[in-house]
Length: 597
Image 1 (cartoon, rainbow, N blue to C red):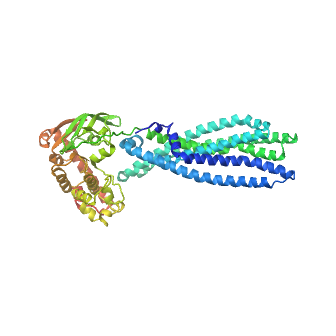
Image 2: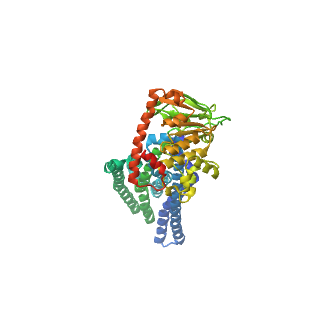
Image 3: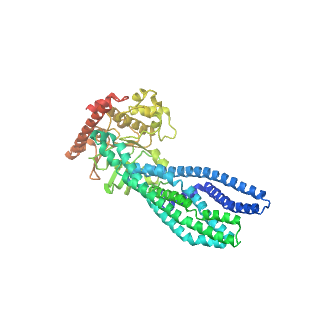
């Protein structure tokens, strides 16, 4: 759920609060190092005066050496603390971003794009994670000029007055630099996200690009943001260079002014030689705009990155209730559900009841909202209006663990997560049983080809080449192993050959009492085996009934004719792709039969 800290203005405070003691320790170490640096000129000046007067100066020489040693130790401590603080802040931001993106689900990629999200998660979090360290360093860097002015005032008020006369100019330069560098950094990071989005799209569609012979054109499209990225980077360097050049112009003039006045006061015996030495060093510290420029640049980049992270975190994630499900058969109800995609209403006033333990096939032409209905039914996404109820309890009211334990999913293109085949089959299970996992694999007709792999279920996914049908069978096995009272199959049989589909469909539909099963179906044979069919048309449920009764309507039959034409085109594409990629080790020959069909 979104919190007030997720807004662009509040997220930096959340990062600083999370840093806690480490940020305070870093700030203290930086300030102590600056204090040691401020004390050293005074100690050196007093030592010089003692030496010129031939007075004992051993104690002050030891004091100077101790200050140098202390400054060195503190500088080393700040390096260690700054590195660990940045790493911890980055890790915290990445965990928070990952959790939120996963909670948002498809809305995250729809809103920002997969590549841009990865760029924000990886590079953006790393830059935003430097904010606590950069702020601590900036405070210490500000302490140097302030302390330098105070020290000059203690030596002679006229020295401080000369420096303060030029302070407004330095302040205006720093303010303009901070504003410009933040804007440039935001532009640069935005172009990085655009470039990453294009690259992710090209990687995901590489086979289509190769088949069209459009590699050069796609490369040009992906790299199109490069000139703008380069321009933003050069603009950042120009801003920083201009600030440094202005500092080089103003700071030496102020230093010369301080030294001139100090020399005059020396001639008037108002300051000593040692104080003149100290004043020269304090003038350098007081006009140390170069250090401030570097720290402000780092803080500006961190601020821009934090704002980009906050844009993602500001997207409201689904909230979960505290309720539990009562004992029940898995009765599913959709009441007045309206949902859309890309600003277009896809489902409009859907009312549907699926009795517990039955099998309902959802059919309809492409674009009628079948997959969106499947997402809404298991609360992978929330409807814009209406509600979904499982055994009398609205899904919004259920605890997250309760909801996910009750609803299982299988998809057309399952994401196989984990290290080994067994890992992916038990993904999401709290206490996986090896026997139950293997039984689910047998039910999904996956056990045979898994056992033929070099190490069976212990084979690494990266070492297990799979056809589309085999991947779907693994996804089905994972859904079967999940259990629960509601099983939703979103076109999860589309890549199977007809024989394998028949075996799985028989296991799925003819197994007698079991979980409620909601199938997105494209084949008439699958719809015919279901207890009932929900016919989607124009974003509404046009009819619900047995397949044999709906089949009497020509428009209903036309739904499957269109699906068969699309399936034939997909099969032809799969055959051409298989010919390009070779025989495909580990591929089930039955999938080849389906591809040729």
